[in-house]
Every structure is written in C-alpha cells, then in structure tokens.
Image 1 (spheres, rainbow, N blue to C red):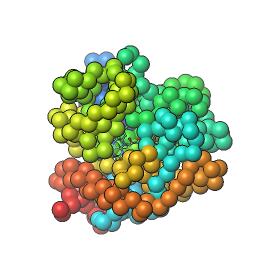
Image 2 (cartoon, helix red, strand yellow; image 1 turned 180 degrees about the vertical axis):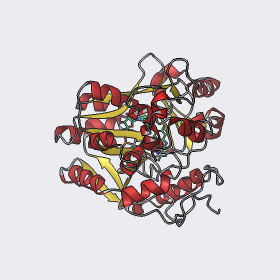
Image 3 (cartoon, helix red, strand yellow; image 1 turned 90 degrees about the vertical axis):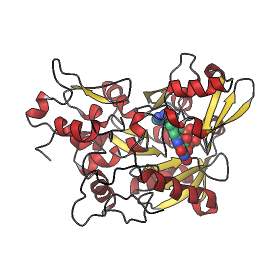
Image 4 (cartoon, rainbow, N blue to C red; image 1 turned 45 degrees about the vertical axis):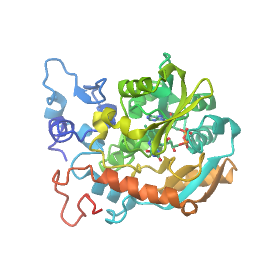
Length: 373
Ligand SMILES: Cc1cc2nc3c(=O)[nH]c(=O)nc-3n(C[C@H](O)[C@H](O)[C@H](O)COP(=O)(O)OP(=O)(O)OC[C@H]3O[C@@H](n4cnc5c(N)ncnc54)[C@H](O)[C@@H]3O)c2cc1C
C-alpha cells in the first residue's frame, strides 16, 4: 500500500462518510499529527495544513491507511488475515467458532454489568492472570450528566473494571486511550470497543501495524446498531419528563429502557432517537463486531445473559479460561431462538447501509452485500 497515505484516507473514508470515528488512525499515527474532533472525526493538526494534507504522508508514511478498518477492501482482507478466507454471502454476522449465552458468576460484576457481565469478567480474569496489564474501555464522564456520556479510559484493576462496566449509548473511541496506556508503560492490552473499533483487531493484523498487533492481546467487540448524540438523548428524555442526572441505567432492546434514581422504570420508542443518530454510524455495515476475538451483545429472550460470538483461537482460549475457572456460566446460543434470529436480522440490516457502488472488491472476492430481503 506504500503509495497511499492520509490524503487518500481522508478523501475515500472521512470525506465520504464511511469513517466511523473509531480513531485507529489517530492511535497509530507515529508522529501524532492527527487529532480528533468533538464530533468524533480524525483531523490533520499540522499547522497551516489543509484537512487532507500530511507532510509525513508525502514522505511515504502510510500507517493511518493501514490501521483504518474501513479503507478500500478492508472487510475481505481482514477476513482473510484473521480467518484465512473471505466470508460467504450467507455469513452475515461474520466468521464464528461458537455462539454462546454467557453469564458471570461474580456477584459484584453481575450487579454492574450491562447484560451477563461477560466483558468485565474477562477483563478482571485477564488482569488477575496477568494475560494483560490493562484494558482500553469507556469511563462515565462524571459531571452529573448521568450514564450517557462516555470517554476512553485505561483500567488496570478490578475496581476500575467495575467502575466502567455497563453501556453508554454515546460514542467513546476507546482506541484513543492507547496513548495513556503507552505513557504508563503498559504492554499487553485488551481493547473493548464498539463493532467498528473491534475491526482494528484485523486491520493491524492484515496490514502489519505490528506495534499494535503486539500490544493488543484481546479485542472484545460490543455489538451495535448505532450510537446517539448526547443532546439528542437529553431532548427525548426531557420530552418524557426525565432529567438526565436522574438516570441510573439505560438499555436498548428494541425499545429505549431507562431506570431512574427513584426506582422508576420507563420505556421510550426507539424511533424517537433515530433523528439523533451519530453521523459516523450512518453507513456502518457491522452490527456484530465481525472482527473481534469475542463479540458480545444483549439481544435475546432472557435478560442478564450476554450473547457471545467466539471468533478466533485466542478468543476461544480466553473463554475457556473464564469458564474453567468457574467465573462464567455458558450455554449454547441456539437455546435462544430470539437471539439467533435477531443476530441475523440486525446484521443484515446494518450491512445494507454500505453504499453498494462504493469500492470495487478484488477479483474473486465476494462483493460487500447489499442483501436481498
Ligand atoms: C453504544 C452501544 C450500543 C450497543 N448496541 C447493542 C445492540 O444494538 N444490540 C446488542 O445486542 N448489544 C448492543 N450493545 C452491547 C451491550 O450493550 C453490552 O455491552 C454487551 O452485551 C456486553 O455486556 P456485558 O454485561 O458482558 O458487558 P459489561 O461487563 O457491562 O462491560 C461493558 C463494557 O463496555 C464498555 N462500554 C460501555 N459503553 C461504551 C461505549 N459507549 N463505547 C465503548 N465502550 C463502552 C464498558 O467500559 C465495559 O468495558 C451496545 C453497547 C453499546 C456501548
């Protein structure tokens, strides 16, 4: 890829709306000339430079294009690198080794986890076993804004993992926390990230961004249809007489569920939030965190279980570790027909977002779907 750099990435991904704001390019930029806007987009911060200019790129640096999980034939090339082959058209949620329903046995995690608490259990176990010395997650911005606003953070202890458990429905570009992890000298990290961020697992592998390939010991993906703006959520909640600072938890399961400090529970139609979809989510084709080592979601008939897609050999090792240690209960995904059907349906819907005419796939590789109904 040596002949392409930031200019091509900017024109083909950022300028066209394909950029999800995952911040892989910002994380990987070796000269720190890429910044990140409040609207979750990468920008060139070199003084006096146009948005698409980069003097380092002009001299041949292409690391941003190689870290990006949306550049050119990203999907089939990442599939090849991680799984040895591109996917078949019917593999709408990507390559999987096994599909499980999982639930933590750790009472402290069960209390704060969003669904089955699998993600936080993997992190605490990984830290205790010294498979990792830190994890990139998302912290709640603690300024009285309720559990809405999130920012990337580094966690290194069980208490920190528990404090950052649960889901916020604003966007948090967790790869940005890599800078702090590096400053602190951490060497082996778990990356917890939205589906778009979880494809970094494959871009650093497929395109040889070796520094981060070595550092990221496990990628845990969060299945995701979209995130919403903070202001949009504030508006809809206010319309329903709910103040953000009174909210203790949100979940989205076909409807927007809100728990409040006074013990109240409210349901709001999800369609009211759609006008407040974050820009970077609008063309994202990946619901199922298709390139994570382990993908996690909350869809299904039963509350408090994490739908878990184990995709890679190292994902399998970690799952075996927590199950053998008695920290996680697991049963087959097929037990929950609702979850399996929704997984296919939501993955299919998201894949239709990708502009069909966008980029040519390499000869012989299957085209990125728009799928038939
Ligand atoms: C914005 C968003 C949208 C989602 N949409 C869906 C969906 O449509 N369908 C579905 O099945 N599942 C969805 N999920 C995943 C689901 O909410 C749970 O995260 C997943 O089931 C894991 O649950 P757990 O109890 O195992 O995780 P926990 O143990 O609670 O750990 C969750 C981890 O996610 C991190 N996190 C929380 N919020 C964010 C954020 N905004 N950005 C990055 N990291 C974050 C936390 O720091 C923590 O490490 C979504 C998650 C998020 C954050």
